[in-house]
Length: 374
Image (cartoon, rainbow, N blue to C red; front, side):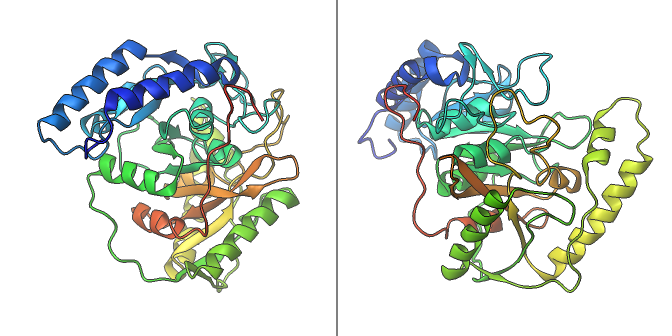
């Protein structure tokens, strides 16, 4: 579009057509802004025609929830066109309920009987199905990374506090769902205002942990994530090292729940957070990355997993504030994706993205044929 080989209005119209055909089954959107999006695309075409350089000229983007436009200012300024608001859990639903679109519950594009994860449910589903290349998210316990893993896309949670979040607890951070790591990196450069990451010396030292010292993940997501690590090693992106002291974090569940519960005593939460911060600082002082599975299980059905927390491997980094990225790790026996989570020191989003861009081969969004789920 910047070279004028394409017009923004045509690209946005094609995205709206994909949404119209697919969303009756996918249920990824709560609102679609067709007329406004086409009008906005025309404005982008005019700006490009006047010689304005827009890094995301005419790129269709979906925003999380009906109020997602409030945080989309940098994307719109860069030329993005917001085409609609994606689904989140409905009001009053239990934590196992991951997405409620305008037409019903949001389904995983790989298997309609499985959840896409949440709470950025529609965002992940829309990107995985190829309806849009980018969707905004927010991550308070894994709400970007878990749906990214279960839908087979890239999902970045930024360092807590680096971008406005509007969360009184400080646990939530903005993020993005993207069809590729380079797209996620472009999003990061636009919203952060930072230049491209400086040179990274490869291989980057990394520590692998299947369970962070407390979780009980299923064997298959662990095996898929570990295989993805080996591919990064073979590609020269990372070098695994053994920490002097094995990583054993305290289970963050009690601390996270206490911080989210009005009137709860925060003393215990502070103790858990302080202990884990010390252990992570020691580990990331000797290695530059921590690698784990993203989720402890495969995507579950729409009735929910019962008492099993899908956040077991993600919410520790909402407490600690570290940036974390989920990238696709492969497909399980049920045909659904799993994810590999990369965690970096505070403020090192560029490092995460640089390593992930060396993932061998290319991953693609789920093939989605005229609204028929695989």
